[in-house]
Amino acid sequence: MNEFTYYNIPLHLLSAYRQERLVVRTDDPAALAAALETEDPERIAGAQIVALDADSEPLNAWAPGLPLELILRDPAAEFPHLYRHTNLLDNHPVRAIIPVAPGFGKAVKVAVSLDFAVRLEVGQPESALIEEMAVVLEFYLHQSTVAQPIEYFHGALQGFFHGEPVSLWVLQDDDPQCLRYVTDEGVEQPSRRLVALNANVAPDAGLEAWIAQVLAAGEECQGCEFLRNCGGYFKWPRRDYDCAGVKRLFGYLRDAAAELRRDLDVRST
Ligand code: SF4
Image 1 (tube, rainbow, N blue to C red):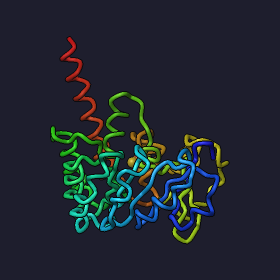
Image 2 (image 1 turned 90 degrees about the vertical axis):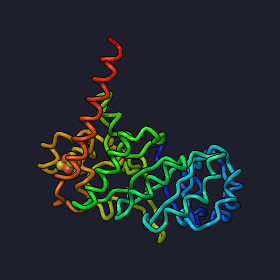
Image 3 (image 1 turned 180 degrees about the horizontal axis):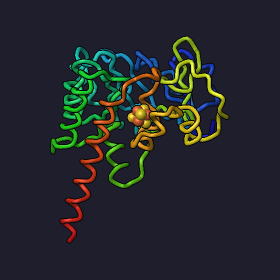
């Protein structure tokens, strides 16, 4: 654990985490604004609204600049609620966290059209969802109106373009070196993805050691051409997950970065 480690906690556990850096999640924005009024703003790294039908107005002018995230649970049903939170953008960077579930593409398009950044909450997608992800990736790569990043596509594309890959553990805010996720019941996990992880690695060993010894220790990951871009992310929680689809998406991103590089080289000659 390092000095930048933060805890993602539910609001009702605030009193138990008085010293740590925090991301606080709640379904009651008014209660959040009131509860954090007396907190040291330096240790609040962000806040998450987990109920999109909640009134976020109390957060509009509260702690300007504080990053906020809108958590969707059922993207196909909840995306219309995104419209009611656009005022937050006046004072905050706001990101919509959209699970890769059937119909999520519509939610992504609405979110970016409203100027929200997006992070896809991706599990271990089966083939139908891979196809939907491919459509969203195409939209992200080729739709000129997309002005906001869609993670993890954006970070992965940058990694390919600059030849400096960043693993999905980092891009997806799941880095076990930087995050402790505290469940609503108060159970601490290294991240949401690593439930019931029983790893014999020093907590401060560094993400590279975690990836080599635990997260991507399997044979397929060690031989994978996208190991440095992924870090074994898609082998959790099920180790027998078939990565063919996600490798295809990584391939599209790699090709897009190469094309971008070629275009820039042509323009500069
Ligand atoms: S794409 Fe699959 S095989 Fe490759 S590093 Fe990621 S989890 Fe491992």
